[in-house]
Length: 115
Length: 113
Image (cartoon, rainbow over all chains, first blue to last red; front, side, top):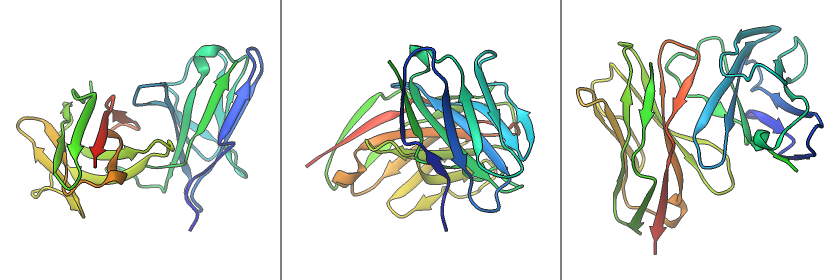
């Protein structure tokens, strides 16, 4: 069984470009979570999505960041006009309908470097 | 508000010895879960062990055990018989009634041969 798949593994962008990070959840999982890890820090929640719905985006910066989880295809985290401070590791996790008090299993992450 | 605190930025342990990584938490929710993750230098997040707030016994998974002291709000990870491959960052995390996991800042463990 394939786990959560994220791509690309590494992404380099120049300031002002767009970054698109993809997350394919575990087959049959309809819930996706995105987390960001800045250097030397723990993971910080960004957004929680179900198919075609954003459930909680309280951790998402108000500008330049957006996320979607369409009916078909992977979840996408999109960062427009990237700045150096966006350089981080972005992790995705997925879960079936009921996740409460069960572990999140993460993908391998996408390491974004903004030059 | 939920909060996880890991006060040991770095720890060293001799190979084959046991080590305890500290974690304290703060929550007003009566029901919550506590988790430990390992992040090796390759960067992936590996789930290690889980403890529910209502669990009567401390969780164990192989060489990992969780020393859960509810009154003290602590959930320390104990790794027995350390191996060189245990060298990594270790993160404590908490889950309660919201949608988020809350992570501590991590402890870097180095196993010395």
